Amino acid sequence: MRLFRHWGLISLALLAMIAAGCGLLGQATCHTTELEWDDFLVINHITYSQNHDGTRPVTAEQLGERVGETSYMLNNHACAGHVSKNGDAAFLPVGTPVYSLQGYESDYRVAADNKVYEVTDNPNAATFGQLLDIEGKVRIVSLESEIDGSPIGDFSPEASSAFVRALLTLPYVGFDAVYEKIKHDNGIYLRLHLRDGTSFRMVFYPQGNAFANGAFGTDELKSLILSQRQHIKAAAGL
Image 1 (cartoon, helix red, strand yellow):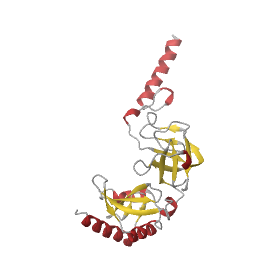
Image 2 (image 1 turned 120 degrees about the horizontal axis):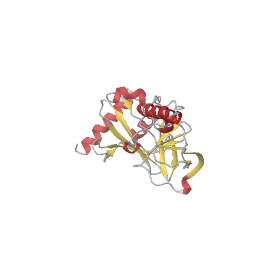
Image 3 (image 1 turned 90 degrees about the vertical axis):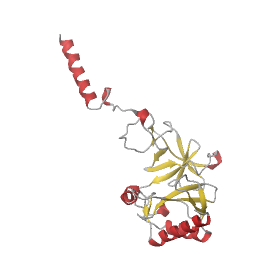
Image 4 (image 1 turned 135 degrees about the horizontal axis):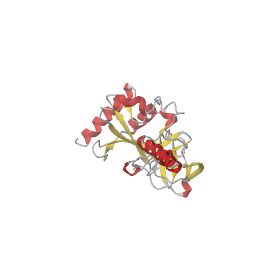
């Protein structure tokens, strides 16, 4: 009888845990297979996302120093409310080494599993110049379709240089700070082509005068973007 009562109490406790959203041993229960993750990782308190459309597979010659390794894979393991921490990665297996890339500060780009990961948030950056290690490395800026991302045309060389100079001086405030200003806005798709043949996209929201990367623009920079956009679209017959 005592044994029955003992297991009865345990059963009630387990039912209470399940009702509270917990599984055996207090682990969270959730449908992890239904979640979709961006391909990101967190190393040294910096969050990076894979640059899948502007880079090529990384070769061994491009690797620099090892800067860390992953310690947790979110895919098929983490619940929707998971708070990311150092060592987290969406799809990289535990123990995947993370390296710096030749020619770039590791605060900006790293490599893992032969892929390039680019910074999306760095709490130590005060300006875009500190966030993006691209000074002297941009070949041209181009405009892309807001419908399918296809290329439309390039900024003039002078406008590209002026854009980068102004961009790198902007205070970095992070995505959360600009979100309220851009959430109902239509973005302008820009692509920065670097001298090493890689590129990355930036989205500018004219009504909020802000970049999704986490900075508010100046009136002069906004005017430059809009004038180049108008010129490029007119030349393309759009």
